[in-house]
Amino acid sequence: MSLLEVKNLQVAFDGSRVVEDVSFSIAAGEKFALVGESGSGKTVTALSILRLNQDAQYGGAILLDGENLLQRSERAMRAVRGKEVAMIFQEPMTALNPLYTIGNQIAEVLMLHEGMSAKAAALRAIELLDKTGIPEPQRRALSYPHQLSGGQRQRAMIAMALACKPRLLIADEPTTALDVTIQVQIVELLNQLQREENMAVLMITHDLNLVRHFADRVGVMEKGRLIETATTADLFANPREAYTQKLLASQPHQLVDTLDAKPLLKAEKLRCVFDIRQGWFRSRPFVAVDAVDLQVARGETLGIVGESGSGKSTLGLALLRLSAALVEGRITFGDTDISRLHSNALRPLRARMQVVFQDPFASLSPRRTIEQIVGEGLALHQPQSSAAEIRQAVAQALEEVGLSPALISRYPHEFSGGQRQRIAIARALVLKPELILLDEPTSSLDVSVQQQVLRLLADLQARYGIAYLFISHDLAVIRAMAHRVMVMKDGKVVEQGKTAEVLAQPQQAYTQKLLAASVYAGVARQDDRTDTAI
Image 1 (cartoon, rainbow, N blue to C red):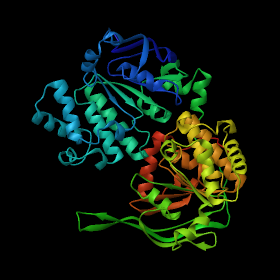
Image 2 (cartoon, one colour):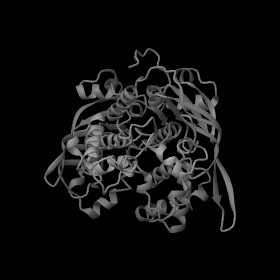
Image 3 (cartoon, one colour):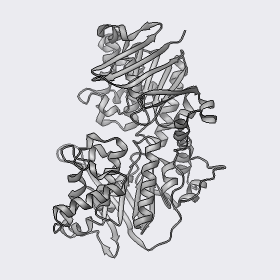
Image 4 (tube, rainbow, N blue to C red):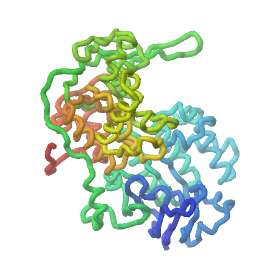
């Protein structure tokens, strides 16, 4: 008998079905992955197992050891959650309680489900943190979520999920926002723990290369339906459905040609120093970027890669004079030295340098319409423009990023993740900038939407000659988009050069480590690929 059997599952909200007739099973100790684009219903399906979809109406059956969970009372379900079936959520910073220490949150699970005393639960929490690879587990048990790195928070979530030795672990996009080396560590940790505990795992992800290296079987979802199920090897070798073939073909491939042009942005001996407070009267300097030299030509993409905390984003913001750090060195934009310009003198240049952030939902005001968001820069930098002229420019910008001008009266929450990122690009594009800083612009997007956004950026660059500073931890994306790449570690540049050369023959051990880790991103080797530049 299967450990979990989902039969003809239906999930509806306010009478509207979002999951339709889904059936699959997971055996004890098996690793099963559900994949599909955003909105395909995979997360709703996973949450249904623990009945965590608020105000949902269910149909069909979800059998755990032959018992239908959909017929259990809410009180009975509390005994299942965390003990029989546990879940790792996509974003641990929002899933963990910011008011309680990590140790207390893990101990709470043990006290509720195992009946442990507070002291015994605290000691067990430290053991679990140690088992999941968190350094100094005794000290980290006393830390709050904001005091841990992204990888450490994810490990703490895994420790909490495994506290009661569940027979089924649901992992919802557990590596999406992590850099490649941390991704590999988390996947290896899950593999190790799964083997040790003979635990079944249901992985929810849009990362097909992660699936290739982790799952035993795969189910593909489209528009709320499970359209294909197969062993991982069979699915990747012989995808049956056209939608599955489309997903597998959506991996980033080379989108840019080589380029030689006049430098637009130059930095010499750039150094960024933060003043870290230590108590009321003491502080210490922290060097986030140290002695960086770079240049970006017109129409060129410079990729900046490295692990979290390597200084990538700090460098990008410093180059555009947006950093809160003390910035030393020289920055030249065009023919202007902007290193010491005051904010009023910089304002006319702001229209020529724009930013697209990682999370468009956080960077787009929820209280403003798309017309107001995209047109804000025009109103500021071109005050002579009439309302009709601004509206026309906004409509044109939306068309250029593939959105209908009829949507300008809508708000950000009414769009998908990929559409919101297009809106963020339109906001930057409407001012016709010469340089755009792209800070992880595709890291939270599924593969097909990611490919659409990358192709859009490549087309806009070819059309308008825009230079990109492209910050990413995804080497597959950097290979597709960047003419040159710069590798950062601990605030320093350890290697830089033409992208094809650096990724094919890295000279530094750290770059080799990143490439070895990115086997999960599918870029360790191109081997016999036949990609052609566009």
